[in-house]
Structures are given as C-alpha cells and as structure tokens.
Image 1 (cartoon, rainbow, N blue to C red):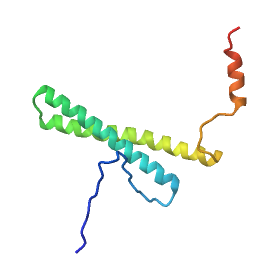
Image 2: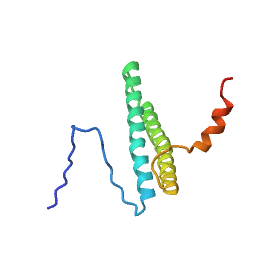
Image 3: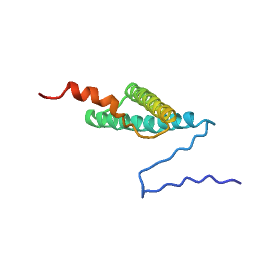
Length: 117
C-alpha cells in the first residue's frame, strides 16, 4: 500500500512548489501565483483572526465574510504576482539577460534635464 509522506524543513524559509505545465513561462507564472496568493491569504487570515479576538465574538456570517476576503485577496495578489513574473520572464527572454540595467543612452538625456546650473 503506498504511503504519503509530508516532509518539511525549519532550517530554511524557502518553500518550492513544483508545477509542470509543459512551458517554462506557465510554470513560473503559476508558481508566482501560488506563492504570493498563499501569502496574501495567510495575511488576511491573520488580520481577520486579530479582529475576531479584538471584538470577542464570531458569527457564521463573519466567518463566511472572512473566508471570502481571504480568497479575494489571494486571487488578487496572486494574479498580480503571476503577471509580474510572466513579464519579467518575457523581458529576460527578449533581452537574453537577467539584469534590469538600462543602457546609457536612456539615462543621459534625463540626467541632462535635471542638472543643476
């Protein structure tokens, strides 16, 4: 009978989720969505827990509202992170490098505009 094992480590705060969609762009986008979406949902859960502890009572309606808010925040920030990671990957593929250094010809005209005389 197969056994399922959950293994974790407390020595490093890094958590890797492996999602194979068959395309590196989609893999990175989904990975960013899941990681940041989870962080946003956990943040919202902590905020809602604090508000429940502060008020001293919880109702069925408030619990449903908290759950809905967790899902909305997770989906929102996960989507933003997925878009960012996807755009960063696209820029990396187009430029062929991983740095975000602009060439000198971009900065020189702007520096001349703001020079003090």
